[in-house]
Length: 298
Image 1: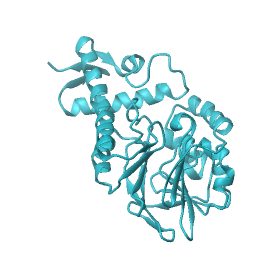
Image 2 (image 1 turned 180 degrees about the horizontal axis):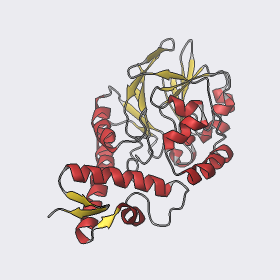
Image 3 (image 1 turned 180 degrees about the vertical axis):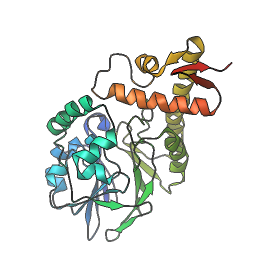
């Protein structure tokens, strides 16, 4: 049985399990006259070896384990990542710093991504910058730097098809993720405005939504997705209004993940996420800090 797919001109999207829901993702392949390119290599890549045969170039929109799960299949392809993410592709040391989790978490995580995501370091990976462009022969790919999820997160626009691969701006009901060492809440807020300006008529996410072909629907989904940022911040502010708390106590409340969600990195991601919202609330004068405890300002 052939994999479910979406096609537009030189571009094909092969959908992963449940529209690419983590741990899977959606695989984009672009076949120019001269060059065959794939965007990321999620788990579904391991079921698409025939379709990926002959790949010349892998352009990573960003680096996380679920976006590099098929790199081991393409040892001869050139691998590119934005300069802010490329060290995380080149080595475990770079990826370790990229995540920034506690050392004991990283030890377990390294074993898990090698086992479950076929992770391999690619010391040959090369860096690209914002507005980098690749002529594939009749088709062009252009990078738009949209940091927040990671420091180097990018959208990749395919023209003349007008398709924007927006990666982990995934428009999911979970909302934005910015829980790693190189993630940034402030950058993500700006990114969610800038992504509107990409001249696309079709949008492809790594996870969940898959393909959106109506501008109105895209904007509605983006608005709901962005609203999650304010909801999390308001939830933290409301909690502090009821009881002054330390960062540890706030992390235990789980403003990002549901209680009981037990993946290794959750505590680290909660800490990074909550700390960024606290900094925003402090900057707005809505919260004050005294000896490690945070108080709502009346």
